[in-house]
View (tube, rainbow, N blue to C red):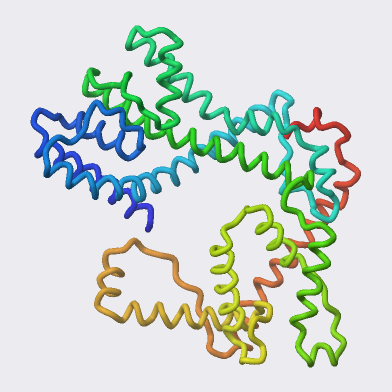
Length: 381
């Protein structure tokens, strides 16, 4: 779903919900209906507004499911991008005052062991940076509600926690606020809940990465590696045994075992990925070469299939309607049926560009070992 379609879906979702709830529930204003929908989508549900008519209850029984899985998912995606932007901004601001954060993606695997990476990082700073967005939103929520309601700081703090965790007891709410204020509060609660969930998820991810680097979870031990190697030997074909081809555990095997042992990925999701790889890797292969590596021949075969599907879709009635109404898209890469011609004109320029980028990256990282920091306090991270 493109950005324009997602925005159109959100507008339509709220417009329909507001009109239907105002139709069924007597005395509800647009602000009341909008507030109710936001509390429903965010799953906070204070209980100050709820459907009382049978028709409204039937409508909400289906509408709420669409809201939680559809609307909430779209809002989460865009809020995550906004949150990442502000987190990066905070990191740059901290760097300006001497608290530089280490980007582990820029530490070459070949030069930095897990212990070296841990020595560069300050995990308390990582946790603080991850939680800073929710701290800011929480402070605004507590101070604003305390001012509006003349409640004590403790009561407002309690209300903020109950809202962020989506418990929503209903003892405090925004029911008797002015319509404009009620609408702003409703939207703010949705964003507050999303940011809180994202921050908690990021903190848990940081903790998992720390444990993984420390070797306290997931990483295969020597017995696991031995078993993995024996499983590979067991699956050797007679031709491989006769040719005395060396068997080994590669990086992909190690990564897959680590993900499964650490519970870092759903086994069924991993199986779906492997199945996708299997069929992508045989795009240009015969039966004997199945499950081989994905090569330039496979890329060529996949490009041809994509071009064929696009041509069929464009030739249909629905395709012509879509092309007439859809925004202008960049032209697709031309694909020559002949592999040699495609490789010379389309593939080789990309290969040369990738090699040049690799040379540049190696030159930039060649002196990194000499610049390793000796204290995590000076690096932050």
